[in-house]
Each structure stands twice: as structure tokens, then as C-alpha cells.
Length: 398
Image (cartoon, rainbow, N blue to C red):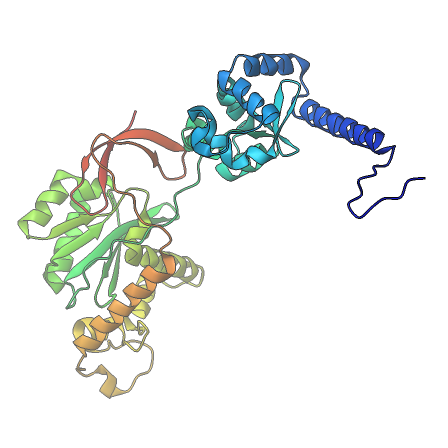
């Protein structure tokens, strides 16, 4: 009869068989994991062969079997990156595992494994999560990120970038100092829209030919009525970038500011007015009303935030219309210019804070970039030079 003392030096006779059983279960578990991650027998043979031919892997197996050096400094250089996970490493035949489900991949197979992980062109996060359940090597998350980021197919079909903080225009100090112009189409007919950036005074003209000459003639008449602006903002449509249009503005000393192609958000004032006029005109047509009725109502409606109508902001008086108003409202009214500028500044700040989600990257000449063209896929190009307008670049496309 055995009586165990306090330190239990008298071991049970069946302890060794239990330990052997545990060892067998661990062996079977590791074998199952290895077979599950490398189910293809042919690839398993290639994998084992690559491990045997990798000097770092062989030394690593020796460390695992015989013990690690006392300090990281004493490790061979290629094995130092494994120091932080050394207690999680184990071997099964020629395969090294980290934890219970990650197989260590030899250097010669890492590119192939990354390609397998990226099959289906999943994004960076999904690929890394997929890798965490199967493979490991030092720096594998960074290498997967680089591989996905450099995938041309992913670039061509990527989502649009997050919206950046808009480059803000200088707030005008008086009416008709700066105007925005654009063209929209409704039921096959094109219309030119102009908006004063100070008073929000809208104008809309039905176009017959949509040529630079016709647009110049319309703007010349508008400038005759209200004076020529200091700046004019438009997109890069051909009728706004022709030599005739350029010479017209230069002859009147009007600075032309162009926004990026396919990026109407940066000319938001006139784009919003486009939508308002287009929607109102479509409804007016159904109710036997005209463009005249739409524009007259817009000009006589307060712009909001405590500011009066565009007609008051532009000409200091309300216009007489079919809508009843007191005679005093048709007389000259004083406009608090400082209040107008304050409201415009607040609106600009609110727009910036509510829509800004990213900071624009700085681009330099010769940099390889990807450009998204409207609703099409991304195209690879090269930055040639910085354009005249802020945040604009000339990019050479294939």
C-alpha cells in the first residue's frame, strides 16, 4: 500500500499511460489541422519539400525541439522575428504550427499563398482575416496588404475614394462678384444656368445650339445688365474651355475657375440650382406653367438663414409679381452686407464639417496614380504636372 506524502513523490502507476494517451491525442489533432489546411496531397508534398529546403525553417525546428536561446539577441538574425511567438510554436513531422491552426509558410511559397488568399479579389481586411485562420509568417499582414493594394484588377474596380474636404472658394463681398455656370438637359433641350454666389440670383436660358458662341452671347447680355464678375466658375465642358470662351473672359478681365471633370460636387452651388430648376421646370410643364414662372418664384423666395430673397440681395428690392405683397415691400431696402457674409461663411463651414471625410494626398510629377472616370472603372496614369486650379493635376492616361 502506498501513502502519498505532502509533495506527492509516490506517483500513480498508470500516470505514464495517461500521458501517452494525451500525447497521441495532441499528435492526432496537429495531424488533422495540417491535413485540413493542406488538403491537397500534391501541394502538401511541395510544401514539405519547401520547408526542408528552407534553412531558417530547419533551424527554427531545432529551436523548438531543443530549446530557444536565453535572449533574443542570441538568436540567429532570420529567427528573431519569431521570438515574440516562440511559445506558440510546435512541430509535426516537417510542419511547424503557430497555435492550433496556423501553419508557418516557408519564404519560397509565401507569394503563392498570398495569391491563393486573394482569390476572388477580396479586400485587405477580409484577406487578412482569412489568413489568420490558416497561415503565419512574420509580417504576413503587411505583405498581404501590399499585394491587395497593388492588384490592378482591384484598382480598376475599386470604389470611389472617400470624399475629401472641399477646396473652399473665397466668399464674395458683393453681388455679382462671382458667378457659377453650368448646363443641364431636360427632355432633349439644353439650358444654361447661372447663379450669383453672393445673392443666389438664378438665371436660366434655353439653348438652341449649345455652342461657345451662343453661351458667350448670353453671358455678354447678362454682364451688360449686372456688370462683369471678377470670377466665373464652371466645369471643363468643351464649350467652357474653347478658345472663343477663353478670349471672351480674358477680354473682360474675368478669372475663369474650372472644377474637376466628373466632379460636379466641387461646383455644388450651381449643381443644386440645376436640380431645383430642372425639377421645378418638369413639374411646371405638366401644370401649363413656364420657365418664366419658375425663375420668377426662385428670385422672390428668401434664401434662408434669415436672409431675404435674391432680388433684395441683388437689387435691394422685391419684384412685383402676381403674389400679393404690401407696397412697402416693393420699395428700396437696406441689406446688411456683414450679415450676408457671415451667413455665407457659416454655410461654408457647415458644408465642410458635415461632408469632409478624408484628406487629399499630395501628388508629384511622375507619380503613378489611378484615376476614376465618372462611373467607369479606375484607369492607371502618370501625373504630368499640377494644374492651375487648386487640387487639380494633369494626368497622362493610356
